[in-house]
Each structure stands twice: as C-alpha cells, then as structure tokens.
Length: 387
Image (cartoon, rainbow, N blue to C red; front, side, top):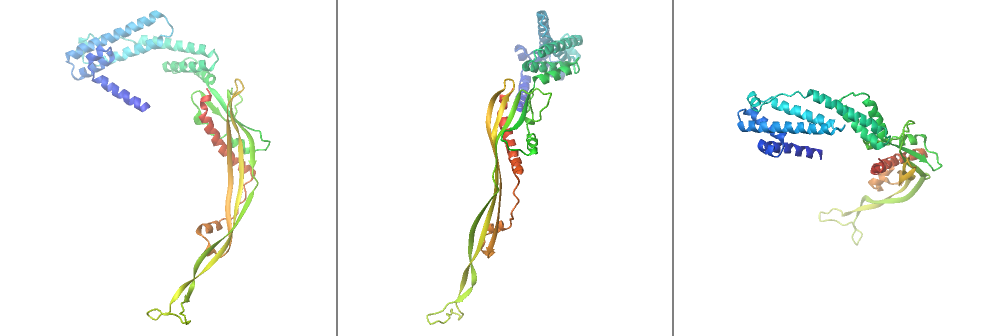
C-alpha cells in the first residue's frame, strides 16, 4: 500500500509539473507555478511570459504567507508557533529556489533578499516551549491516553532540538506511563507436580513480535512493573497413559518355484515334444513365515484454559479452552519361518528394535511445547482485547 501511494505521489508531481505556470496561478498553486517557471527560466532566461508568471506567483505566495502569519499572531494563541515556523521555513526555501535564477530574471521581478533566520529561530523556540510545557501538563493527568499524547508532543520537541532541557527524561516517563504491560504466566491446578523445567520452557514462548508501540508482552515478572493484564495459562488436567504394548500375530505366505515334474501319458510313459525331448512343467510350493508385531504406545494430554484478565478491575475478559496431546508410538516385529515369504514392508519392521519408553516428565515437556505454540496463536488472535 505504501509503495502504491509513493508511485501515485510521484506521478501526481509529474502531472502537476506538466501544467503551465499560468494554470497553476489560476488554481492558487503558487509554489507549483514558481517551480514550473523557474525550471523553464533556468534553460531560457529570456522567456518573458514565464518571467511575468514567476513575478505574480512569487509575490502572491509571499503575500499569502505573510498575511497568514499576521493573522496567527493577532489571535494570540500559544499553539500557533509550529505553523508559523513551517511558514517561515517555506518562505526561506521558496526564496532560495528563486535566488539561483539568472540576474536578468531577478531584476525583472524586483527580487529582494529577506533574512528569515531570526523569525525561524524565534518560531522554533516558541514551538518547542509550547509543546514541552503542554506535554508536562498532559503527564500530570497521570492517565494512559494523556501520556501517549505527551510522548508524541515530546518527539516533536526533539525534531526542533535534539536535546531540549530534560525532554529525554519526560519521554521515558511518558513511555512508561503510556505503555500497557501484559504478563504471560501459568498456574498448575492439577495437583500433579510438573517438571522443574516446564515453566522455564513455557517462558520461552515467542511474544516479542506481538509487541507494538504501546503494548509490551513479558513472560518473566518484573517486580517494579505495573502490569495491567495477565494472560494466564490455567492447567486443569494432566493425563499420562500407562506404557502400553499391543501384540499382533499373523502369517504371510508365498508361492515359489520348486523344480519341475515330468508329464506322463496314459500308459505311464514320459511324454515327448516334437523334437523328442521330455516334457516338463514347473513345480511350486508354499512357504510360510509367522510374525509377532508389537506396538509400543504412551500418550499425554494437557488441557485447561487461557484466561485474559484485566487487573484494573480483576475481571476475566476472555477465556479460551486449550489442549495439547503428545504421543509416543513405536512399532517393531520378530519373525519365525522362511523370511522369503515376507513382503518388503514387513521386512522393514524386522529392522526395528524395542525402544525405552519416555518417562512422564519427558512426555509432559513435549506436550508443553505444543501448548506453548497454541497459546501464542490464541494471544495473537485476541491481541485487540488489550489496549
């Protein structure tokens, strides 16, 4: 979207530049008219029409800006100085654009240099003074909205002066007061002890990219932090199944070649083909192999809720059910009989050996890793609840 806007602005400027300076004056676009005329006069300083248009546009623009400054100062409002500063800056820049034109052009339009530096310095100082004073007043309200507004105003002060009084101190204060801090934590309500590293691993949940200008998610509690929300992973069930072994017995058969046999006639004589050779037919047999296939299985389920709690009023603003499962499954097999009877996939199973079952803590940690990812997804989807 940003790229599209930049492209639009680029082509808008080109289009504006194609409009004649006279048309720009008629539309009140005096600076655009000055740009068009100055560009042409740099190439052809003798163009009388452009000199006339430049003269009109420059005088109209300066007159308009001076009248606006007089009007603002007559009003006597303390918040005028940012606009006054901006106008003086524009006047100075406009003057510099015209100043580089050939002398015959400057003489023709009666160009006289004006020094705006003192006015710019005064307006800058008064703008910074106003914004600084107003920001401190906002901070005295001691509420989040005012602090965020104060922060923006103080940044504008820094645009005027990189180091202005104790602006950095107040910026830090505004940031602290305006930021909403959210703590992600866990509570085990199952009565079943969790592995010591379970909470440590849970705290590694990646929430950093969910932070925004005024939202900060944390997983380790800071004693000096004023948390306004808690996202609580409330674990209510941990179910670890027993270690299971399930045996399956089956056989596989295969018909294979087993030599040959002669073909006899009705008199018991071996039959001959047209060349006098004995006639033989293939002989087969069935081979068999018995398999015992063993399935190892163990499972863990962790479930509970993910509760969004507003600490300002101790209210649960949203609850989402949450659950994760982790399975240990392993298959191995042994065979008795002729292995040639086995299918290729069955032979693969014979390459496997029994594995030790993971202990309960290992299973819980693996399920915890899954629930951590689910928690992050739920938090991301409900981020708009927090402000």
